[in-house]
Length: 227
Image (cartoon, rainbow, N blue to C red; front, side, top):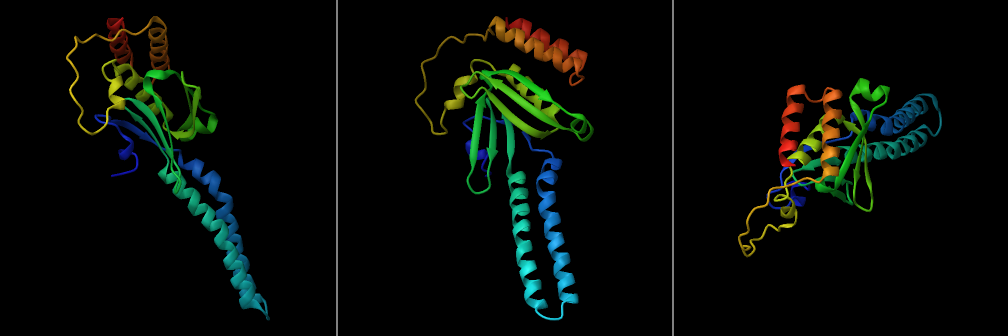
């Protein structure tokens, strides 16, 4: 079982797992790899050109090259283990190699999702996602996410599918509990402000080409029926 699986509540399912784009890794490790290569070249030159002390100098240069290599490997493993997951109830951020850091935001508190892409982001397929919530933190910044359109679409679709009956289950433990007294189900009724935000998000997805006109109409009708 992975670390992410251990964070899931009962009946919670993962809809999407995203990672930072590989260019993010290259930018943050390229200098260290080049530095190690430069030290290897110097070690080779020293071993072949120096007449005295060449063995000591070569070993020192090779030992120094282990520093940038270690940093590059550490950053690679951090990049590999970073996970940005959308579940049926929340958004999970899992970071860290040795010391794990976990952040989560409830989908019901997501007020808006902003995506920004520069020129290189559009060319290579990555972008930044800002998730605006009603929590004290306010905004979750996800930088350099690969396939940001897919991430944003999945997040908004999962929020649209979220009902009031789903929300309390985020806090249900895996151990069995006493059954609650049966109550008459109450259909979810979004507030006017929330409906307007969801409708605006649907229009944004349609205009950007993420969803088709038919998918837009289907989602729009579902939202209108809940009002």
